[in-house]
Length: 198
Image 1 (cartoon, helix red, strand yellow):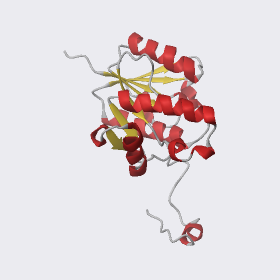
Image 2 (tube, helix red, strand yellow):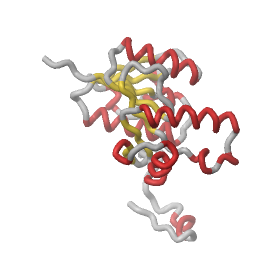
Image 3 (cartoon, helix red, strand yellow):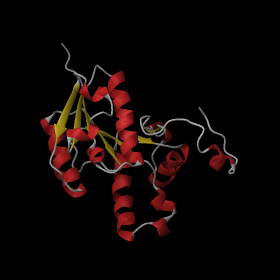
Image 4 (tube, helix red, strand yellow):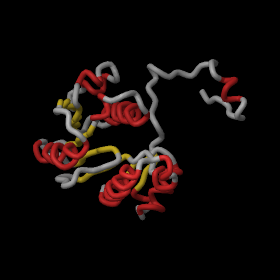
């Protein structure tokens, strides 16, 4: 019998504030897991309660929830995640923005945007320096890059020299328990010439 391939997912954002990258990751991977029973998934997060009620996909038999101690970004990427890659014999690891250094498995990364490249005036100099180094490295050294818009895809290609074939656009997911289509707010968007979609 062939062993199932093992996929790790860094979901440390699950314990963070409600923001786009958190919702995107939680909603997207709930669907990926449901569609991929042939894989074993290892979910790395700080507190399993953070995904409680998000989706029953996270309770499926092929999902292993691994609670990990809190670590700052430096420790997470140069120590914690590389350890998990070896300990759980991962074939693939998904992260957001940055990949582990060193890495002991193939990686795929979601880079939501690189706005700091074109609009540096809105970011702290240290953030810009760190991001230029680490996101460029992630984009160039990952097996594949995901992003959330055609605009971001074009910018990652342009700035980091990643071929179009190595970047896929996956539009932002939403949390339907918090956001539902309705009539409220139509006037607000209409004044900008926008039309709602159902």
